[in-house]
Image 1 (cartoon, rainbow, N blue to C red):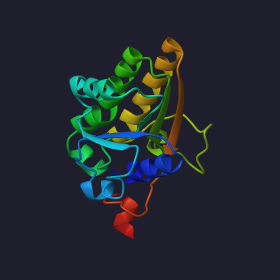
Image 2 (cartoon, rainbow, N blue to C red):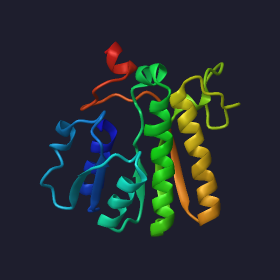
Image 3 (spheres, rainbow, N blue to C red):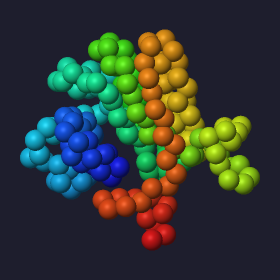
Image 4 (cartoon, helix red, strand yellow):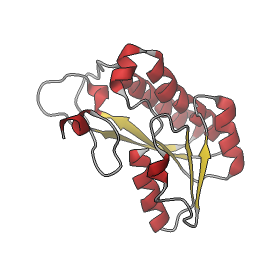
Length: 181
């Protein structure tokens, strides 16, 4: 995807090895073209909604850290079909956590969203609340955050949750800000 391709570029520039797993339902192979052939980069087409597919990714390589950016980023499609966010956002989280537990991976960076706040008056901060998402996307992100919190407590893992607002930049393919631009 858009954000993941930029993250992979940065990690590679710092000397890390990157295995990218994506089903390409919302991301594009064009985003990967800047990464293909680079030393330390591998791509696996995998649908992380499937525990079996997720497990096959974890069998390919040992991981020190998982950067979890898989989600249904097409908010309008999620409003029409409420199962999209359940599968592409929440179940990908559950499957990744299950495989992390099984394979002893203790670090996770999760791309969440400011959508977990819902409609709050004034400026949003990390202490804003209550968290009352108004979209299935925001609800799936918030549920994922809760599962990650429990996973860290149960498995002695560390997680960093980043609540992105709307993001735009090179290689973006959709989103409210791109629509306005």
